[in-house]
Image (cartoon, rainbow, N blue to C red):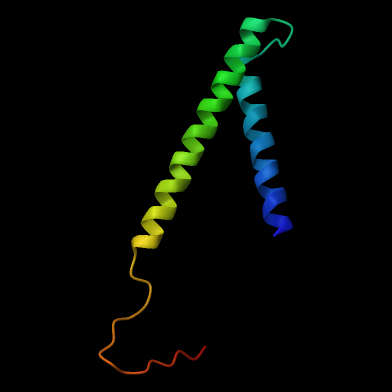
Length: 76
């Protein structure tokens, strides 16, 4: 579980760095800082929406085979 948390954290840091470098944000200017925060919040919202859609689609799929009152043994 900790590897997943590290991977998500690194992904977020890289995404924020890309937003920062694309906007060429000067944090001493409050207007640019506000714009950066807005862009970061937008990115988090899009990321959350996409994650929700993928999760919703995955849970709606039929993952197990349909059977008629029989026992299915899966041997790997």
